[in-house]
Length: 76
Image (cartoon, rainbow, N blue to C red; front, side, top):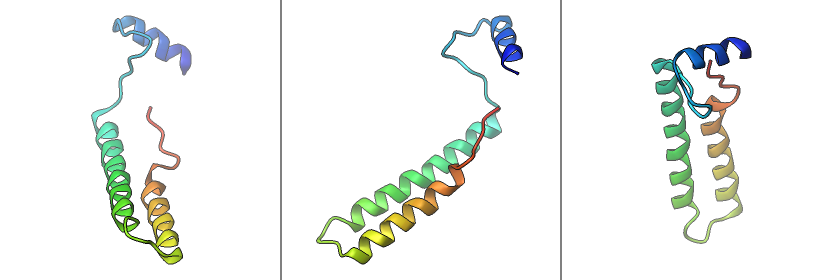
């Protein structure tokens, strides 16, 4: 597969740091990243004012839940 990708990139005159990804995959990735970004913002706000141990545990659980959709994501 790597060989085919290199050959196709030469055909399209792409640089070494450029890739082609299906629009649907990029949209899916951006949606998942937005979910994680929103969770981080939530956690930052939740932990601003003298957070308790429970607040930290809830924050970690929330971040993990938001990151799960990114786990194993593979762009082809």
